[in-house]
Image 1: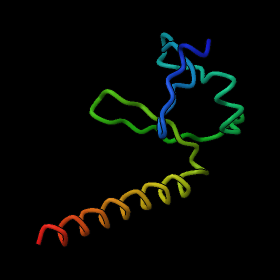
Image 2 (image 1 turned 30 degrees about the vertical axis):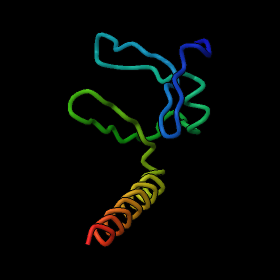
Image 3 (image 1 turned 180 degrees about the horizontal axis):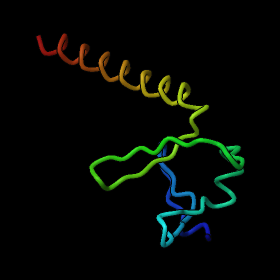
Length: 88
């Protein structure tokens, strides 16, 4: 995959492409496996959103993901509280 095919922004990145095989299997691109330290037999959690998004997270890394999600939620709640106080 060439650089012009990779979309990047602060929180999202397209890391490659794959094809669904006859039995529903997909091959994770080698670069992604390397970055995620994936090895044969590793368990992955599959996340879906509105039937349009699929994300994979190494099950050993779920705590890191939850910590990041919690930080973002706390930040948003704090912003909402400030906005509410500013509106009064």
